[in-house]
Image (tube, rainbow, N blue to C red; front, side, top):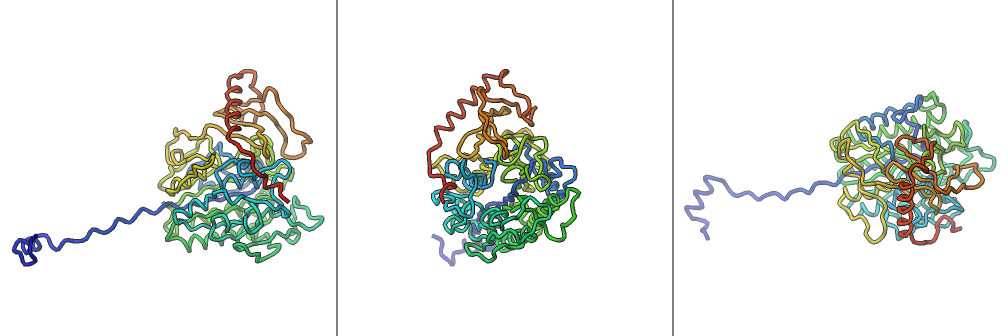
Length: 464
């Protein structure tokens, strides 16, 4: 050992100075996540998806700066099961959040998302994320089912659809609806703060709450879930958007949702969070076609909300992350809302549950890849309630049972199943089953294998 007064030490210090301690390496901050979920939005309702008169400049810019999916799906064709799939990464039949008798939860329902399910928010909490939900929940309105019981630090919104708790004689499909005709509770966390909120301001209020949350948690990783109440009927928009769209009331509502998206993206830019935040925009299911002008459009796709035809479950899907996702990409690779679950958990460094079947797949290679990058997803099962109606593998989709979303008295079974090549026939008009029996057989085997992984559980939607 060299003594403190050693000449060697003196010479060393003179030449090199006192040794400096090496600062600890600051760990890289996990990315933030923002999922914006519209309600009953059609595949053809956005400017960047081809609508000629609905103006969505912020969503169009989001698509131009990011990745636009042409084959992105919700996991169900109605509200409750589709939201359960997004939050759990699992087909809703696995959690009991599906039913043929009561297809969604209602104000008199006593069931909800089971406590044993691990939500996306709960998974992200294991990595220290701040989590906030702002909008329509629809996974159970009793305290044990609300967002604050499922991994969210805070909640502001309505617990079910905006047309529920309606007064007698109300017309939710009206183009001149009265906000006082609908009296869903508005909650902050688990406490009701208003009954029958002014729905002309509800999109704006959700947005303001989400923006405040982002500002408050800008110095830590966060997850914002923003499930809008609209364009589910009844349709309302705030005063600045009245008469904004050539499409009328429905277009006005989407103009305000588009404004909301723009405010979120601008805030991320202004706070310097833009290069560390994944934003994803999509919808819970297709358009409610029987609402006529108060409903949306599935574009070239067949049918709409409630059905397992493409218009019921194929949705706009836009991913945005400047600096990570290459701008201007369009992909026809297959992806689904359940994949957002596994993607976000993986990017956060959190564990995807391995004690149960998880149907979501990690899309990050596709998100961050090039135009020729393949999706990890090769197939999709189309459930209506607890029954498999159709299945897709690659370009081909087989229909075992078909039924319109609304208005068809009974389902129609098909033996052999109908078969469509969705790459060249996305409108599902030309049955090619006779030409491809081998493809049909492969899909049948795939569905049988999937069925063996599904266990019977209590159906939450039927508990009253």
